[in-house]
Image (cartoon, rainbow, N blue to C red; front, top):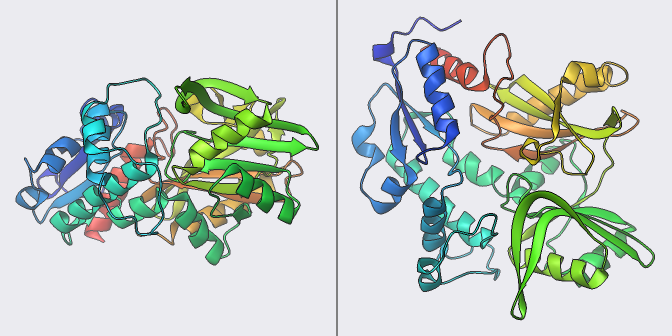
Length: 387
């Protein structure tokens, strides 16, 4: 139930990209609660200095930071910011110059330098943090930066003894990956772009003797003496070791996170994991993601399943442990909400948190106590205001 706060005492500001359905869904949730729509601030306006949050903030403001989305112009702007940003790790990754960015044309799925994008996005998040000051914010800029770095967020969870897959790294090349795998006796891993999302640049790699296999969303296109990488909804399988090495080398040049590939439980002849949305440190919205491939992301046209149905036969007891682990992981952050990817092993005796997602609440039609994710988050933020 909506807290007894009149609309004149709540002033939502949402930061995002024009045309993003996430903004539309958030605005619709406000309207359904009888609240005024949020004031929209675009990333492009913030980056260009055409607007300052300092001028918009009021004592009643509640700020929501949305995903930059799929806007090519925002991506170019973030790459431009990151072009000359100092890398805090002191490492060298693929970058493109400002001149090259100016000459970029939109190519669907083209994977552009993700470390450079991340460094640019961190600069914007730091700007937002300075401008909002102590205002109430639904998701903290520092948390978004942390969750967008798979290496750092994995290390944080591991440090606090939250169940996660074992990781190795840093890995800078295919040869280094093979050496580290053989050293540990591993024969299957997930290689992920450290700053990727939505299965971007993810490779499920395994080998046995002379046989090698890489299952991925990435399409490799030869461009002169180099490779260009493209994301696709079509799952590809590479079996030539030389091609696999070239793929992983290209991803390593953008910074990767590598985890042991833990087999997932199955349901209806498909593997599955669970997207869990935690709000105010409580598990609220859940959906099982079923797939015939190792990639379960719903945007890859994988099927949804009801968690209760999927786990009812064997996984009910482990689900309670997993819920508590998700809530404990959420408590390590200072944000109102987040998405968590969760797997169960085939025997349902173990679970592991695969990823923390700052923008993992896009689950249209999934309800908890008759509320979608956006409505539940708004209600929780208003409760926090009057608490």
